[in-house]
Length: 178
Image 1 (cartoon, rainbow, N blue to C red):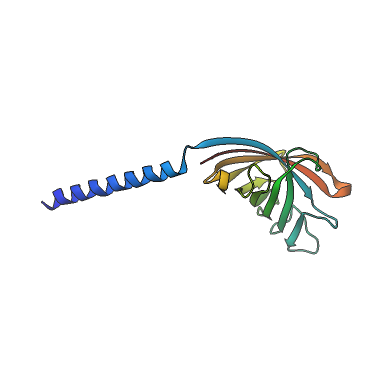
Image 2: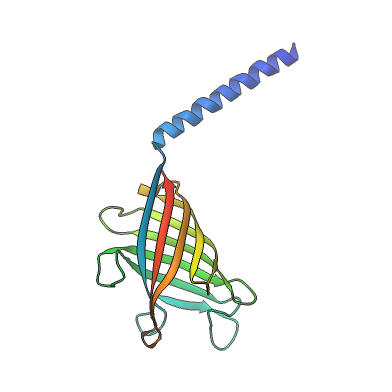
């Protein structure tokens, strides 16, 4: 008798969970795939720096120095040229997290300001092998157009001018979202 009631109760609970899950999926719409290439205009020195160390453990900071934390607010454009159309900002932190300086932990919000995606975000997080030609990190979330995003991004430094403390980083994003 008790087993029969427990079986019926379990069936009712599982049915309710299934109904609620299908309602939530219906509210979100269909899962979509988006791919895009964006260019980060990065000034890592000088009076207009968009990336700065905020803490480090010795007299001088270095990208290779374990424990160094950088804060960033890079302009994002649709092409390599910094005068091309603006898409948004890359805002967040990098932490040199490997003792030998080979990995940086990335926590970046891609904050879209353009007309197409304005107000939406993509959240990027993970270990980046900072001295490799192409670095891959996870896209772990998003808002607005990219609600519940998941996927990956690759980053490659496509231009570097040490005299200006300036680089352009190409970001290729592939995400699934609702």
